[in-house]
Image (tube, rainbow over all chains, first blue to last red):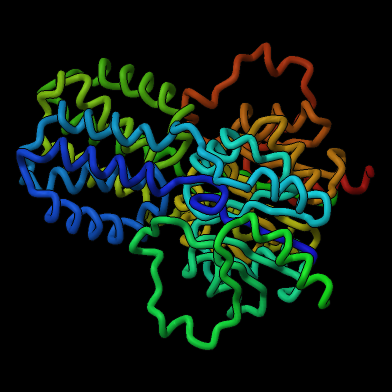
Length: 233
Length: 233
């Protein structure tokens, strides 16, 4: 293995719970206009629609919250209420980073044996800030923040670092972004599920059929697993 | 010269005029609430304040427009009016790219002799989209989109590509972002001023005193200039 890349959000630290909390607060703020279910559905639609224009990340999320609020209130929402939405959304840009259990210890060990990379999609400024706040930056030789994690992205990165797919291992919580595209280009992938997954990152079971990857219950299992497969190679 | 990097906005294509147009439309939208001068001042303050939280780029600009509008109307602005602001701001994410005069010809020549890089700061998604829309992507061997262009950024990139500062040339329209930090780390820089410069990118004359860089009137002068200095090296 020449290069081991880790996804960041919900692989190295908790992220999705912060977004879920902000969505709950949005529901409360708009509760006299709209019921929770309608809001959740409309907000998800707005997020997906806006992905192709705004990309991923906190600012995109904030703009989608504002648009949804305006749409669902037929423009009746006040400026002051929108400012409340912005203030809630800002929390996504500076929440304290909760590094997941075992991550520090595992990175400490692996960084001595392998070149490690953070490979995350999202908003450049936002993701850089989270890496800095996590205190994990020094374990990683490389950081790559990309706008989308698909086969082309992984191919481009492997080319840039002159690493063969078979020498590349990706570790992450998203089957859609961290596992399937890597397996498709001939790389190796380890899936470490997180307690919650954003609906957009879910994949149907049939997409996984016949695909070769490993699922681990926790990042703590990584060191023993890598020792085993390295012996076999 | 091993690596020649080009700034993108207002170096390869026109960018600032689109932002100026959107600001003018914001003034019109809010003209019954506030005069142009107050709006311009407050909006600039909001942008600078938000830079450290949101970073550069169109989404950050949109959020600052919304906040300024709410602030200046004491929250009286309606949701429908804020939607108009968002719709105007969206234009920043898909305006047709106006490649500057001479850029295509010069890149065609230089890309045959040198490794070229786009080195731009801003929003990842936004900048990638502009590179794609410009049709210039194939001239560049590397693309680096960064959240800030300071000495640390340039040092990190040179290290990553294993290029010595003396073998690096940066070309751009911003003295603050493209010229001074490069000169400070021992690299070479060429300043090609654009017709308008955002106030935040301006530098005081005394900061330029004693700094060795070249100013060219147009990108067209680049080929002859590089032939001359390459002969001398």
